[in-house]
Image 1 (tube, one colour):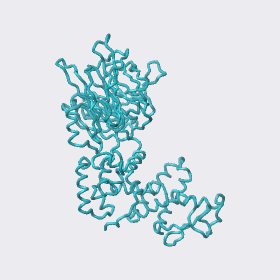
Image 2 (cartoon, each protein chain N blue to C red):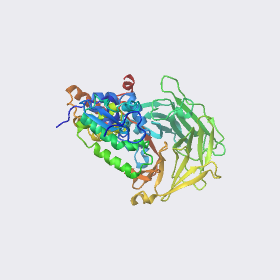
Image 3 (cartoon, rainbow over the protein chains, first blue to last red):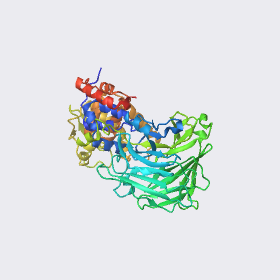
Image 4 (cartoon, rainbow over the protein chains, first blue to last red):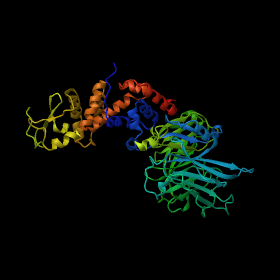
Length: 389
Length: 174
């Protein structure tokens, strides 16, 4: 027999719904569709604020990678939760753009036109929010062979107040581009250009003039992933002996030497919860974790060595696993590509999870997408609706 | 056993208070247990509820109140320890076992508990029952959620609205 129809106060319903796990956003959608009063409650700003405070850390909804490593031409959003980007827009975007970075709920997409020699003529960028499907195209930049790019909430630069980055997706955004004037290491130089985008699209916005540095160009041929630590954004260039660093506040560029033993390509940078820069390197079946320590002479200390054979199945070791990315939010999650598919390893818990079964042809960078997705951030239950309630 | 005079419950036997349910049943309980309720805590601190007075609770019937007090009595010692940082693993496991069994109840009782925990502002109990309901509707479609919670079937208009939203959130149904 069906129980009697309950008369639950909004406060009690809120207490119930707030406990739904953020890594399974479909559950909140189902609840929002179950009845009108729940729908209204879930799409309120108040609910979202409380939900974020209750769960604190944004979950990983999926990751992005350029499909080329899998023998595909399309960029992929591989879900690690029940969330899926809205179709068909996402398919369209992922067909036409490469992913360059992802941070603070924003994805930076990149497209470059090449001339006959294969040198880029211009760089185009777009910031995409896969939850709201909001897109902001940036003015294109002249071609530069060697480059890195990062996207982040503008508050991280420290000049527009503080932000915990849990719910800043629609707010002011910074894109940092690092390029070089040419291929000649003796003559050419690195430069940085910054794009600031306010939340209102009506303003005329443009890239800053290039800021040149004495830092010579690193040897790189593609967009590289970045790590944000405090107000400093780091780019690790493969095969290079240094890490490029740009301070968002002082606007100074500098270089951080890599641990002397490491010129490996299988490498990922990340910021830890307690604000240290960490470098993960995989060599053969061994993962070593280096931490930036200012006191030491080399500037780096080896903190931990993890034997991967204890974490991954045998099938993963036909060839050496590659570290291809790291979550940039202090969760200490790294991505490994192996012959048995893609794995995440949580360096805190030591837990390995297979997140994609497809074997890749060659390693390619992975960008974790961490965000809260609650109904009311999209579509009919839109943020505008949430504002008006 | 007669309740000691109110006002000085710090020495000797634990101070008792009396709670009166909506159907006029009297419950005598240790002040420490009743104080898990934020709503009652101030009255009790002021010396209320002792002797023959009793605190009337017009929104809570006797069946629900006895269940609420069962929870409070079990959780009072740990709460008195300030969240029991020095509680042993055995104590914690025992409380967890108690909690699991405690919410293994009829849905109508669960709803009464939700309301009572809300009115009496008993944080731990609120959280426990809310989590239980969240678990009950885990993995269920909107229609199944309605049925589980005993909502009436949707009107045709409501159904149409649900369908429209479901199209929009197609990804949630993959």
